[in-house]
Amino acid sequence: MMSTLQTTILKHPDSALNQITFTSGGNVGIGGSPSGSAASYNGGLLHITQSTSSRGSQLRLTNNHTGHGAGDGSFIAAWVDSGLYITNQESEGIHFSSGGFERAVITNSGHVGVNNSNPRGLIHVGTDLASGATDAAAINLKQTGTNETTGIYLERSGERKGYAIYVGGSQDSLNFQRNNAGTKSDVLTLDRDGNVGVGTTSFGSGGGQGTGKVFQINGSLYVYEGNNSGSHGGAVCFGINTDRSPMAQIKGHLTNMPGVIQQGELGFSTRPTTTGGASSNLTERMRIKADGEIIFQAKAASGAIHIGGGTVNSIFRTGTGMTGIHFSTNSLLPTGSTGFVNDNNNTLGSGAHRWGVIFSGTGTINTSDVNSKQDIDDLNAAELSVATAIKGLIKKFRFIDAVATKGDDARIHVGVIAQEVEQAFIDAELDPRRYGLFCEDELQDGSKRLGVRYNELLAFVIAAI
Image (cartoon, rainbow, N blue to C red; front, side, top):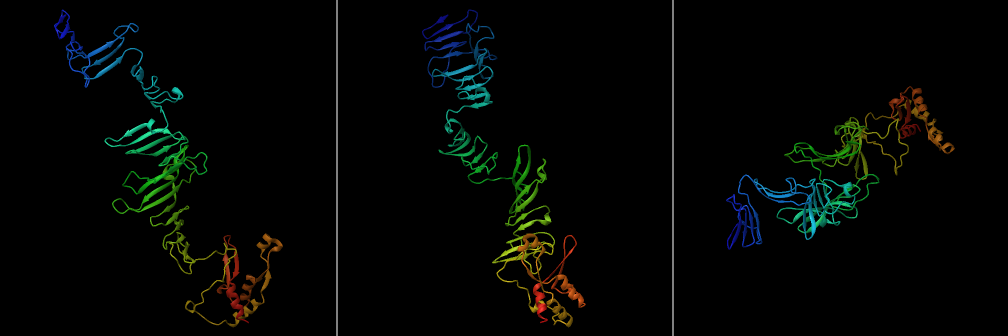
């Protein structure tokens, strides 16, 4: 041992190195002289050094209970790789305490607990879970309250802007709250029933579906297609858990390619099969075009029903010979298969499919303009004889289907029998089918149904008076 007024040094007689050095300031050096101190700390210093560059320095702690062998105790080491190692060779963990209370623990299985001495997962913050290990996961956070101050907060570097994640509210919901320089608002909520709210924490009903979920948005929902090179604008699909292929779909379409002005269309599709299939099995049933035209696709493209189109305010069916209706001021006008109005081309009903009763404030108007007629002439003697004969053919009668429906309450009608009118023309050696007052229509079963145009028939009869 060597001692001076400032320092006491303990050395082994077989070594030229200082083993233990005590300074007058209360510092102790093991393996060399003590030097340096922790930043802003000027108290006593225990400095362990290692003069060999291939080895590190360590502080080993043992006790009689666990033993003092090579595999016993704990180490705090500064190793040659510049790392600090804290090692417990015993079966217990490593505990950190302050203020007389344990604040953190690393168990012998590698689990970390903060304010929890028995962590249930790899990381466990807060007190134990309500059901212990039953609900535990790899990372567990037990909140001390039900608001954002007891959850997880992530803040952007250099700004007071971030998001808090917490469980709380009347529905035990998972909430994502935005903090914008102190102004806080919940932006996303998932409640315990599986309902999702964006910009709202309250939910409406599930549309009468007892097992359905609500996705409610207080604001706008944007659905984008990730591939900008295509003509699709994103889609919303509908299905069930047992069949993840979409059963229905609402899809955005772009009518022009990127690089030019885009026009958006919206398509509605359903899957006609009852078994699983890919989205390619979806059939488009309706499309809303960029100009507002609506197309209803029943089964074939040529038979689609359009709302809008040629003259905008029309409902029409596409395909050869198809018709439609145009809504004009105080009137309904006929259209063709492109939605444009036409003239004197469409028929209301048919011989096989008749309307029952037409109610109107005034009678029908038939074109009688001389500019629309040719071959104008007086009736000849044979025609006048037929007119006279028809005058004597007027009878009263009841319709068979009316009697079947109303019984004795079926009313009596007055008119002619088409077959008798036909025979009157034949008796005068005239062809009744050359005259517009006589009608013959073929039904779907191939049979014939005869009729008359009473406006022409009465004019014909009047000519003979």
